[in-house]
Amino acid sequence: EEPMLVSTVFIGDLFENIDLVTRLDCLATLQQAAYELSGSKALDENRDVRKKKIKSEMINNAPKVSGSRRLVQGTKEELPKDIVTGGTDHVERAITSIESRTRRWGKGRQKITPSLTVSNRFGPIAPLQFYSLLGEFVKCKEDSCLWSGANGARLLASCLITLATFVECSGVHSGADVLAKHLFELAWSFRSVEASEVRSAVLVALASCVPFLHSTFLVNVLNGQSVDSFSEFLSKSVTEDPDQNCRRLARVIAKSIGTLMSSLEFGTEHNSFGFATSLT
Image 1: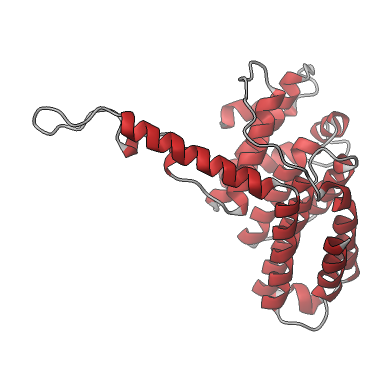
Image 2: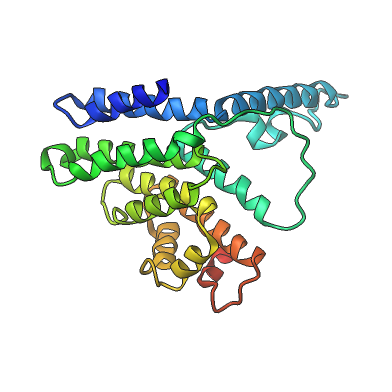
């Protein structure tokens, strides 16, 4: 009950007469709460510990310098990129999430030994938080004072990211596909906004949605029955968007949907994302 009471206060005050920094702080707090309640934070921390352990073992076991101090294999520069460095921002998290779920769709998955079991306490309240925020957003969507200029773009991007976090953290709980569908449709409506911050948030939202969407909805999207020119939008984002993060996100989304269509063994008449392979 307490998480819902707190979130109700935050969401209720979000679009009142407060400054932008406070609004963004409210949204960031909602994101962090979902992240922790879902168990994702504990899993990520456990994963980081394992990566550090692997890195340490690789360095310790690597051959040392030989002869005239020539470096041989096992240097830090040769370690896998995801072990040497790692991003924690929303773009990196969205890419990591959709890629991990894409591997589950594909064939020949590797055997995974679970290292930590967590309970998702956010899943049951995800719909309540999602629709509370969405409802307040819809009420204020015509308020030009809120959404104009650079500040409006930042607020819009943060709202989309927060909704995407709610979907991502809902896990396997019932109704996650419905949340994903509604977020997909909302994010899609902002695809043409010029601000790169918003375009990136739109793609983060789409990336968060795709793993949860029902296959029939995706097929309709590919055929243009639910959303017009989705494949064209991703294709242009990959090749023409001036923002690097937007290009990366679009490429990952295209690849993941192409993988899903292949794993479900749809015919080529359903797979408008045949371009995904060439883009990646």
